[in-house]
Image (cartoon, rainbow, N blue to C red; front, top):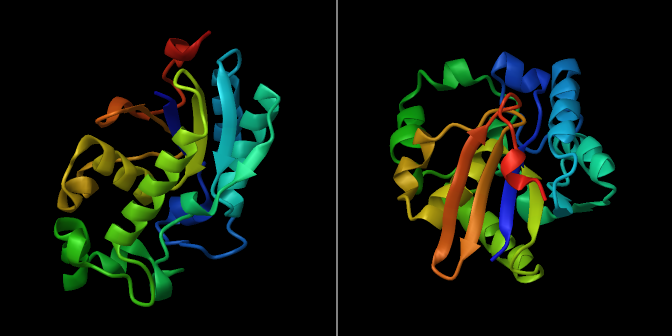
Length: 207
């Protein structure tokens, strides 16, 4: 069955300053994020990647661009890979939110939380897992493809495919420009790697 490489977008000023971007337009990669994306693209040189899919949000597309260029592929935007809709929490700072009672629900009981004016984590999980299953169905069993997305959707996808309860998905960390690998199986998905950063070799993907 196909192998999916889930890539989180590179650093933005929102990430650096602890602010929630959500689906706000005009949140590009910062200088470090662009460097991260370029470095990661070089890691994929010579690997047998068949396709590069991406969230349609600017920071994800900017991350996908050098990867696709390195591989000689086109970026295929996919709405199913988009960031969680966080509603009125867009542009809010994490630190003040972390002092509220509702933040404890987000961290410890996310299965019952809905972002004000936005999605539930369960809705995000269903969306991205369905998207990855649909993309896998379009590929041959030995194919490897990349999906550039966002931290929470990636964590939620991993939780779904390895059977981790939704209330524990926050125990994972997905760093900027990290790679998480899942091999699809008839029983769901097998986690091959979690949160590999730019310093980690991807030689296991060499053809």
